[in-house]
Image 1 (cartoon, rainbow, N blue to C red):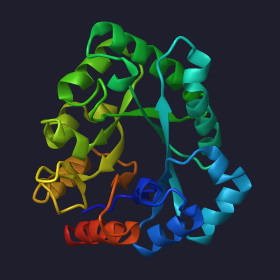
Image 2 (image 1 turned 180 degrees about the vertical axis):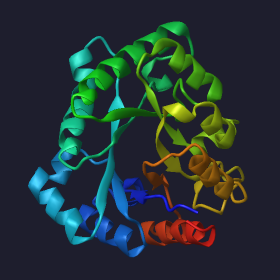
Image 3 (image 1 turned 135 degrees about the vertical axis):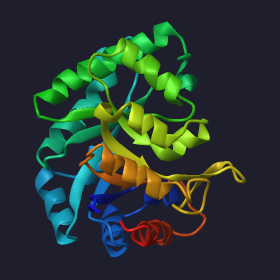
Image 4 (image 1 turned 60 degrees about the vertical axis):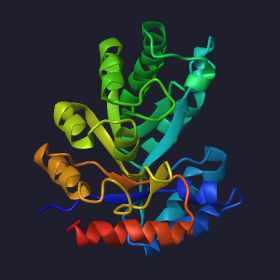
Length: 260
């Protein structure tokens, strides 16, 4: 059984404490047993390329990816400014893909052709820019956006020439789609994976093994092996009722028990 590169997202720390120390989060992510990190923080919090390299290398971590939001307004330059800056920053670390989310319905977008075309226009422009750095743009399916489930992903592909996917298992199952089926059907487009679990009792995400995907996570990972996926697996949890470290360790220990 091959061993994936397993990373952890810093979102748990940021949502747990708005004044969180990124340095402390990196230390806890390494202590919990992860190989790398995906950061959602603005670049102003990461500091210079040299400083951030020193900080993650001190913890023995790799930068797996950066998270960015792609807006859809009448100002394309503004819509893509953050994402482009993160592409350029991430290129110094050799990240293979930038995680991009967007298409928020509370921004006025709807599940209709006009909105999909507008979002895809932005994603294609970003992908063209990122290609100069040999980085793919991996679009993240997300609740409350126009790309929640498998049907929405098909709409995305209908209007984009270059979009790739960041498969988020928790958001897919919460939206009623089967992550294994989506991965199999869109194998050639999977550029990044967010591994998370969903608890319908509390209608929120939870640590791996504590939700409806408990008995399916190994199948998900085996499916990724079958399609020869080689990029990062990022464990992500939006909120925690414990501490970020405890939640990160619970998920990492669950993966170890599953053989990963």
